[in-house]
Image (spheres, rainbow, N blue to C red):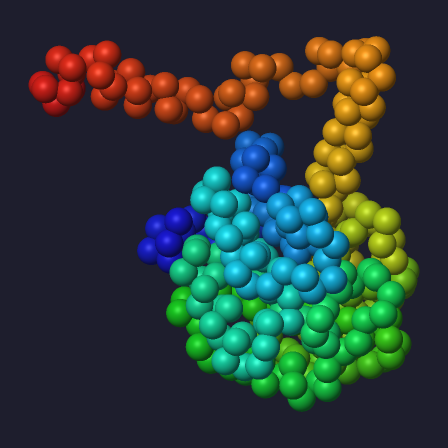
Length: 299
């Protein structure tokens, strides 16, 4: 999918229709297809799940734009609903951030968030984070907002200052980032629902809630987040954690030789439908060598 053939709707469009916009996280092309088939209107791709699922690595800055863009392209091409992606800290200065912006826009990505962590960055719910001066992040946001290829591209500013300098500093940064051109803000690692509600009350913009299971923030249902005023609800690693547990159980069952889980997975034919077998068989039946008369007649 290119910029010209991206999904008709964008994340910006969906935000005008749904509150909150619930975006489950995909970790590969198959999970992206499943999210669309489940009826969600958009999805999220994060660095945490992509580094783990594609490269077998923790999210501590080992993957950069090259690794992530290759993985993101597979997921974007697997479905035709809009996506919000994790752009980490832009992997450099203002020119690197604009290069990242254009790379993702040309892939058909309609929204991204960039954070104010020092490189090498790490998952926002891990210890040892550091943040850059707010002025450095503001410069990146000004450069990105002024150099969009598509004016619909939605840029979110994430701050990791809450865990390092406290909630007041996180809010000060969020306000500055909105003035610098961010379309929304994402305050990472808030500790309770009161902090989450306070952020929405004090900063007038679109807010992103990161519902990361096992992280520092409470897991809040979408309906409650909507009542708080959140515009986007990310459930980024829900699928990843479930699939890891399922695979571990299946492998333990196979290793034991007991084979108790045989037949408890997806049905073989149902899986083929998930990956689009009917579409490909129709093409094969219509145009394949088994039907040369159709090919010659144009039918």
